[in-house]
Length: 148
Image 1 (cartoon, rainbow, N blue to C red):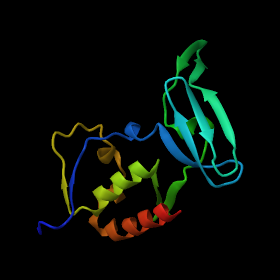
Image 2 (image 1 turned 120 degrees about the vertical axis):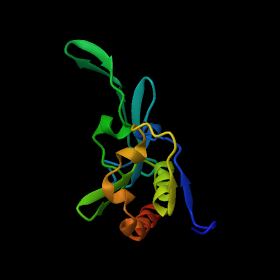
Image 3 (image 1 turned 30 degrees about the vertical axis):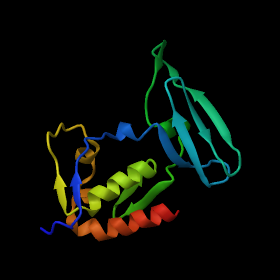
Image 4 (image 1 turned 45 degrees about the horizontal axis):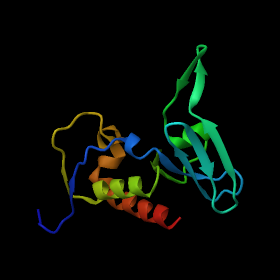
């Protein structure tokens, strides 16, 4: 292995590390909008058309008020902005930081995983993300998403 070839060191990130701000398709103008969730509420807003929607994280479950934590776009049933079909599956990312992390992993020929926990984002990815035969096609797809 050449020292100049890309190397990836697993940072043990989870999908939840990226889900507080999710890029989505605006339900009004179909341009990029952002769904954000904090401890109290979730908000979807579009800088293009001004569309805004807000909701509480508190839901009634079995007559009990509970805070439901999930990726920001789920509160609005919004379509992900950063997604494209790949073979018989879908490649997606929640935001640019998530896309960059996936790109670093996919582009690396040497992938180092120390102290695996079985809860990291990378360990939960579908098989096609890991396969070297898909590397070039996935990197082209990532470039396409970055230009979107």
